[in-house]
Every structure is written in C-alpha cells, then in structure tokens.
Amino acid sequence: MDILNQLVQGFITAGTPINLLWCLVGCTIGTAVGVLPGIGPATAVAMLLPITLKVEPTASMIFFAGIYYGAMYGGSTTSILLNTPGEAGSMVTALEGNKMAKHGRAGAALATSAIGSFVAGTIATVIVTFFAPVVAEFAIRLGPPEYFLLMVLAFCTVSAVLGQSTLRGMTSLGVGLAMGLVGIDQISGHARYTAGVPELLDGLEVVLIAVGLFAVAEALYVVLYEGRTTETQNVLSKVHMTVAEWRRSWPAWLRATAIGVPFGCIPAGGSEIPTFLSYATEKKLSKHPEEFGTVGAIEGVAGPEAANNAAITATLIPLLTLGIPTSNTTAILLGAFQNYGIQPGPQLFSSNSALVWALIASLYIGNVMLLVLNLPLVGLWVKLLKIPKSYLYAGILIFATVGVYGMRQSAFDLVLLYIIGLLGVVMRRFAFPTAPVVVGMILGPLAEAQMRNALSIGEGHWSVFVQRPMSLFLLLVVLAVLLLPRLMRLRKKLKNA
Image (tube, rainbow, N blue to C red; front, side, top):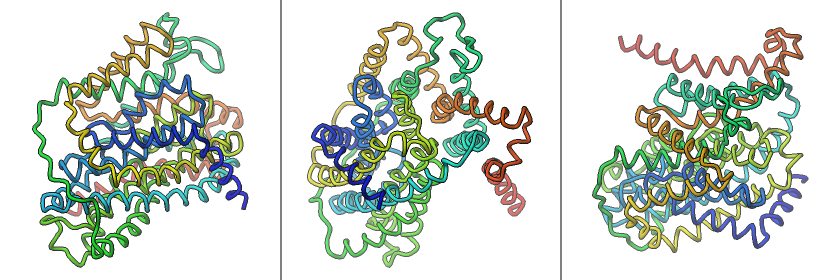
C-alpha cells in the first residue's frame, strides 16, 4: 500500500504543468531522434546534459527519460520505411517491417510497432514500480565489500557485453578508470594526473566526456568515414490494423514483454539480445511461417518492438536501485544524476523518493504521450528524414560546442571536448565500445572509495571479500561473467573439431 501512496504522490509531482511540458518535449525530441538514422538516445541525452546546470532535477530527469524511451518508439519508423534502424534496438524490426512496407502494409507495421511498444512499456513500468523498491530495500543491507564488488560486476558486464570483444571492452573501461583518477584524491587531498593544469584539479567533467564521446565523435565519424548514401522510402499507407492483424499481434506483444523485462532487469546490457530472441520465438510459433522473409510477417514486427521497449524500461531497475548502468544511455543518465549530487543506489528511494516516484510516474504518462504522438504524427516524423545529414551533423557540433562552453566559459574545455571527440572517432573506427569509458569514469572513484573502506573493515586484508557470504557470491558472479562465455566458446570449438 505504501508503494501505491508513493506512486500517487509521484503522479501529483509529475502531473504539474511544467513537468508535463518537460515530459512532452522529451518524448517529442526522443521520437524525432529515434526516427533520424544514426542519432541514438545516448547522443541526444549527451548533447543536452548541460541543461542540468539550469533546470531543477525532477524536471530534467523526466525530460531525459522521455528522450530515452521516446527514441525506442521512433526507431521503428526508419526501420520499416527505409530499412535503416534509427537505433540498435530496431535492427530486427527492419527484417519484417520493411518487407511489409514494400508490399503496401507499412501502416499496419507502424501501428503494431507503436501499440506493442505502449503495451510492453506499460507492463514493464508496472514491474519497475513494484520490483525496484524491493531490490533497493535489500541493497540497503549491503556494506563496502559488497558495493565494491557490485561495481566490479558493473565494470565486467558493461565491458564484456557492450562491444565486439571483451578485450576491447576492458580497454575502454581502463581509459574511463584512468579519466576518473584525474583531480584531487578524495582521501589524501593530493592532486593526481593534472599535469599542472588548474582546470583539471576538480577532475574531468562527465558532461564534457559524454558529449565528446557520443555527440562530437558521431558527427566527426560520419564526416570522415561515411560517404553519401541514396535512401529509398516506401509509400506510407494508413496507420491501422485489420482484425486478423490484431489477433496475430497481441500474443506476440505479451510474449515479447516476458522476454524483454528480465534482460532489462539484469546487468546484461542493451536490448538487442531480447529482440533477436523474440523474433526467433515468433518465427517458430507463427501459423504463417511462409510470410517471414517474403511478404513480411506482422508478428516479426510486433514481437521485437515490444521486447525492445520492455527491456529499455526495465533497465531503470539496476540503474535506480544499484547505480549500475547497463547501456550507453543509462550510463549518461547516471552522469546526469551525479551532476545534481545524487548517487543512484539503494539509498535513492529514501533520500530522493520524490524524484524517483515522479520519474516512475512519468513513465506511465510518457507511454500515453508517445502512443498519441506516434500513431497520428507518423507522417510528420517521416518528413524529418528529408533533412540533409550535412546540416544535421553540423547542428550537432554547434549545439555541443555552445553547451560545453556555457558550463564554465573555458576555452580549455572546448579543446578537451574535441580531443575526446577524436578519441571517440578512433574508438568507433576500431570497434571499441564507448559506454565502458563513461561507466569507468563515473563509478571508478566510487569503487576506489568503497575498496578502501572495505580494506579498513578487514584491517588491510583482502580476505574480507571472501569472508562475507554476499560479497563471496558477487565475486563468483564476476568470475562467471568473465569465464563462462570463454568456456562455452571453447566447448563449442572442441565439439566442432
């Protein structure tokens, strides 16, 4: 009952005119970002992080959340009409959605995508509402050894999952941890790795690093490595579904939600895996398997899109309750929280309960807003696809530069921004994931502090991490994350040999 009372208070806070406006603007920008190919929610949130200097915390977090799940709705439009996913989670939607569009059924594909996203997002939000406080209540009982190993688990999962190889992920993490060491040591008070530059005494700005790695790097990469492409667009039919298409869609929505939510709850990173699993499930269970890969099966659109949105909404559970980001965008959202001096984790539900419950309430409101935005306004979103990419990315560079300069009016920050941007280009060119850099930079100093506290409890002995049952369990989970994939690959090799 206490949860319902807090949720009602959250709706009262989120329902104020100014917060509703921020939610609407965030959902609109997020949908537009999802529609535009190549610009993901991580880039958009990174570009807009400087607003945390001027906007009240609850409003800005509602705004960023609107961008986050709004992009998931919008990404299906380009997948279906252009065969170009607006973001990674919509890759699978393109398989059947574009074939439906080529056979004059683009409207039905867009409709099942939008309604499925609403159904899955709403169910996942209910799970976040009731499950997140339980996780937070349990996590309060943890001590420094457990918190340190939780952060090590975050490092390992994000580094191992977000990228083509564990080695590249760990290298990116090392870069982030090194960045986190710059500045004044929290315990000794000595300056570390500042090279005598006064601007570095306070450490590297998370906003600056995020904008450089995502927004600036994205624009520069497109200019340097991606040539001109001619895009063809399929005709947009009326956005509606027949009775038969409704019957085929709703079981796919529910099955996909059941697949997507667990992948969002655990620190496994991204929504690509549940979308592929959902697609494979629908293909296997479909009564019309001949439509897959030919004229386009509506279940192949309904399932992956619902799985995508369910997973994305559920990622808020590890972020809010444990302070563990499991995707690029949640890593940047973690930075936005920290800009306000707020550390997501088990204490968040007690120390900042008004903000948390307003954020959760905004998910319900945002889902309704996005359904309204996506069904009638699909034609408007399609017009955004006509913006020349050269103008689009030039605008991103201008926006990023002005935003970062506005933080401290420092020319040094601008130089650092473009150095980080070039680093991001190199990382992308050689397939190094960027999310571990942000995660390492944010969580690195916190992990260092918890490690020192844990060693103080153990009187300098590392055995403190195996003496406590929960920390020993987490240590075994970390080892499993690192070793199991390798053992499975080795087993597969030996089997095929």
